[in-house]
Image (cartoon, rainbow, N blue to C red):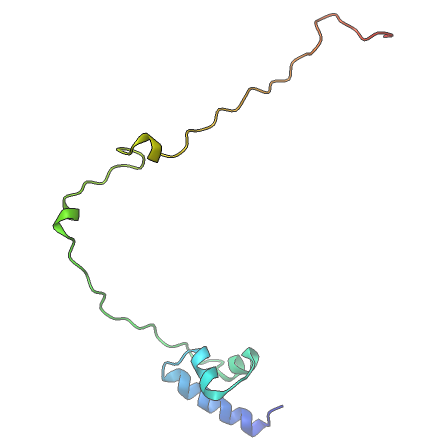
Length: 107
């Protein structure tokens, strides 16, 4: 069990690391083993680090692909690539198994 002084020191260090952009996992690696509850309590009210927003590179489309037309799903594919044909289920209609007027013996 940690003393109150140790908990306060831990909280100060955890908050400083969080404000520096460290994740919970990174904080735990730096400060040493502790439970999720202890770390969450120490960081209560401290916002998570901002997601890194950088410029995403846009690559040019090669000329071969720029002129390709996209077909609707299933169109233009070989029959073997279109997927399985829908199954036709047999008709399971309940029918009278005895001819009309037929009764069981003894009735």
